[in-house]
Image (cartoon, rainbow, N blue to C red):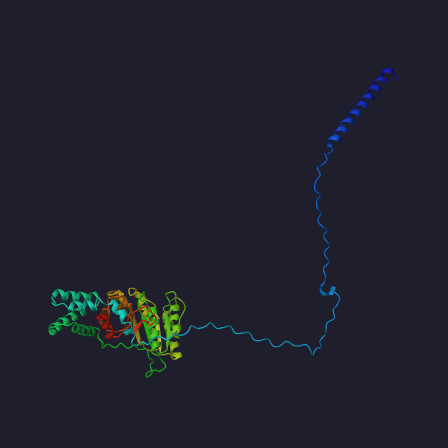
Length: 411
């Protein structure tokens, strides 16, 4: 090997030795930098107590040692008895039956209510007739008073003429004489001779199995269903039994309302589906009355607008269907006394469709137009048989002409 080659080998070896030492130095520094700093001392953490191993699940009493129990023979074992019958469900309590007031004398009891609202007619006439000089102006006032009370034109003219004649003949007019004179003339105008009997008795002679049939008709808003329930109370108060027929199938809750009235006095109510055929319900009610041996069947019809021809024709159909059992004994027209002459229009139309046998005037205590009693009787030729004088259940009274006139003119 020559000198140049030897020198090159020595230089290379020196470079290798120097490079390796530098690498060791750098590696040493990096290892020192990577060492973490010692952490600050911390409070010792309490360790949770070790959980005891859960016991292995057992299998009922089989895992326990058997227990000694007394054994019974077959003869000692009691056999189960027959099961007790289930108790019957309790029936709902029926409302206590009410005892309606006797119908006789009701109008006398209610006369004070009537007199309070009729002062315009009775006391007004007495005041005018008591004037010292009865000139034409006074007689015109008397006539206006009568017309205002809805007596009607023709009855008013007749009454004024009779009063003129009798006052002229009487001469001296004391208050008692005038009151007696006015009472007599008003009583004549109301016609006490008209038959006001309410035919609700069973047909004992002609057909003992057939009850009396009463139809109640009228327009909407007159309190017809309420009046029908009150009539049932009048019938019960007279000692008769009654079946109610809820033939008003068009007005919501009309049948419920009528049944409530019937339940209060122990009267059965025959009803049909809402919107059903009213003639069918009326027919079934009469059939039920015959089967039960009732004295009276009271049929509440739907309120009819007297301007609706189709509805009025249907009312006639109800009457014809009911008459398949026999003739209808009463057709009572319910009129609101406060409607005045409009009630007269209703009365005429109803009289054309069904034969009205009597009038029921409601709300007579709330109006001074008591003269409608005269007007409606004159128009239809049928009597007022019942009058309503309040809101109570027994405030429907048989019409008594004498008591009515006494209420008009006062004591």
